[in-house]
Image (cartoon, rainbow, N blue to C red; front, side, top):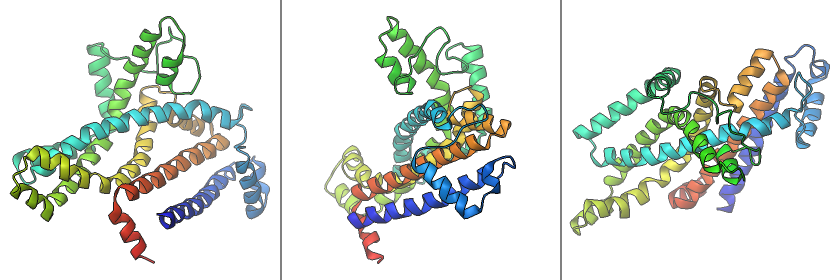
Length: 320
């Protein structure tokens, strides 16, 4: 396991160095930037030194970019966290059901619905949900993280946690308001990952069903419920953990569109504003922050997958 972890860390360091080249190249796109007139590799080493000190520069308005990222990134992480939890809670049961009924009518319906859900443009489904749930029914807010009537103190940057930690006498109403603002963006952002989790889980369950120990469990007279929870899920979930981690990168991509539509003050909307202003310092800082987080999430999912799935360690050690 130590060898596997060290190899993952080495891969992370190499990828991160390549990422810094991309971030530095973005800074050199600005003809007015002092980075553009320096020697490339000499400037890159200076850039690495600044990154090691958590110095990402200042934006067009003279504000340190690292301070802005600390303000906007938690909002995106909060949205992605709830969307991922929803995707797993919905995708794993439905994918298991489809895998256990492989080739049957129910499997066909689930697979077709999953394909349609993955194909629907995220901006279209977001607008339709706003029109139906917010404008017609009035169940959910249209945009933002909370109503302007409430003041959520900045403690952690995560609105749900900050609402719980506040001493405001209207704390329960504030928590409810924050959660209601999360509903629509979370559902929209979770649509594509949910369909992918369904597909991955269906394939994994269908593969596990072919194993001899499942046939032996049926011969022993175990019920379908016991087979699913004692044998199928225990062996079907570990292989998909690294693949679910990969979904985080696509989820962050979808988050840019979701945040723009719902006026969510996250790093996706912040990056779009930086692009509109041609703020190259903010662009490179946002790219570095998002890409580093994705790399860390992928490595963490790989390590967790290796810990719960001994076959991964066996295959890794075999390739030496």
